[in-house]
Length: 76
Ligand SMILES: [Zn+2]
Image (cartoon, rainbow, N blue to C red; front, side):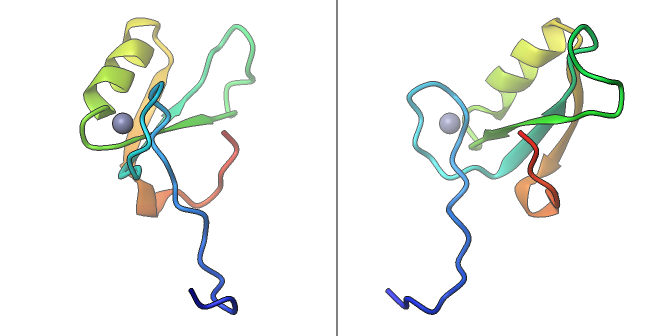
Protein backbone atom coordinates (compact mmCIF):
# COMPACT_ATOMS: atom_id res chain seq x y z
CA UNK A 1 0.00 0.00 0.00
CA UNK A 2 1.31 3.38 -0.95
CA UNK A 3 -0.38 5.92 1.29
CA UNK A 4 0.50 8.79 -1.02
CA UNK A 5 -1.41 7.21 -3.87
CA UNK A 6 -4.54 9.06 -4.82
CA UNK A 7 -6.07 5.78 -5.86
CA UNK A 8 -9.77 6.15 -6.25
CA UNK A 9 -12.02 3.88 -4.29
CA UNK A 10 -12.61 0.76 -6.31
CA UNK A 11 -15.97 1.05 -7.99
CA UNK A 12 -18.12 -1.88 -7.04
CA UNK A 13 -21.08 -3.44 -8.77
CA UNK A 14 -24.46 -2.08 -7.63
CA UNK A 15 -26.19 -5.45 -7.81
CA UNK A 16 -27.44 -6.67 -4.48
CA UNK A 17 -24.83 -8.72 -2.67
CA UNK A 18 -22.23 -8.37 -5.42
CA UNK A 19 -18.75 -7.20 -4.52
CA UNK A 20 -17.23 -7.40 -7.98
CA UNK A 21 -15.37 -4.48 -9.46
CA UNK A 22 -17.64 -2.55 -11.77
CA UNK A 23 -16.75 -2.33 -15.44
CA UNK A 24 -19.95 -0.70 -16.69
CA UNK A 25 -21.87 2.39 -15.65
CA UNK A 26 -25.59 2.45 -16.30
CA UNK A 27 -26.87 6.00 -16.43
CA UNK A 28 -30.55 6.34 -15.79
CA UNK A 29 -33.31 8.77 -15.02
CA UNK A 30 -36.72 8.35 -13.48
CA UNK A 31 -38.84 11.04 -15.13
CA UNK A 32 -41.32 10.95 -12.24
CA UNK A 33 -38.78 12.10 -9.68
CA UNK A 34 -35.80 13.48 -11.60
CA UNK A 35 -35.43 16.45 -13.87
CA UNK A 36 -34.74 15.33 -17.47
CA UNK A 37 -31.03 16.17 -17.41
CA UNK A 38 -30.42 14.42 -14.11
CA UNK A 39 -28.58 11.10 -14.26
CA UNK A 40 -28.41 8.48 -11.60
CA UNK A 41 -25.65 5.93 -11.94
CA UNK A 42 -25.61 2.25 -11.24
CA UNK A 43 -22.37 0.36 -11.58
CA UNK A 44 -22.23 -3.16 -12.91
CA UNK A 45 -19.70 -5.93 -13.17
CA UNK A 46 -19.61 -7.93 -16.40
CA UNK A 47 -22.02 -10.49 -14.97
CA UNK A 48 -24.66 -8.02 -13.83
CA UNK A 49 -24.72 -5.50 -16.65
CA UNK A 50 -27.50 -7.29 -18.47
CA UNK A 51 -29.55 -7.88 -15.33
CA UNK A 52 -29.38 -4.26 -14.20
CA UNK A 53 -29.88 -2.87 -17.70
CA UNK A 54 -32.93 -5.06 -18.11
CA UNK A 55 -34.35 -3.91 -14.77
CA UNK A 56 -33.97 -0.25 -15.71
CA UNK A 57 -34.96 -0.81 -19.32
CA UNK A 58 -38.27 -2.41 -18.40
CA UNK A 59 -39.16 0.67 -16.39
CA UNK A 60 -38.09 3.01 -19.15
CA UNK A 61 -35.38 4.53 -16.96
CA UNK A 62 -32.21 3.46 -18.77
CA UNK A 63 -30.50 6.22 -20.73
CA UNK A 64 -27.07 4.86 -21.57
CA UNK A 65 -24.52 2.25 -20.66
CA UNK A 66 -20.88 3.33 -20.77
CA UNK A 67 -17.59 1.76 -19.73
CA UNK A 68 -16.89 2.79 -16.18
CA UNK A 69 -13.70 4.63 -17.25
CA UNK A 70 -15.90 7.02 -19.19
CA UNK A 71 -17.82 8.00 -16.13
CA UNK A 72 -16.64 11.49 -15.38
CA UNK A 73 -19.02 12.68 -12.75
CA UNK A 74 -20.48 10.48 -10.12
CA UNK A 75 -23.89 11.65 -9.06
CA UNK A 76 -25.35 8.28 -8.31
ZN1 LIG B 1 -22.12 -7.73 -10.05
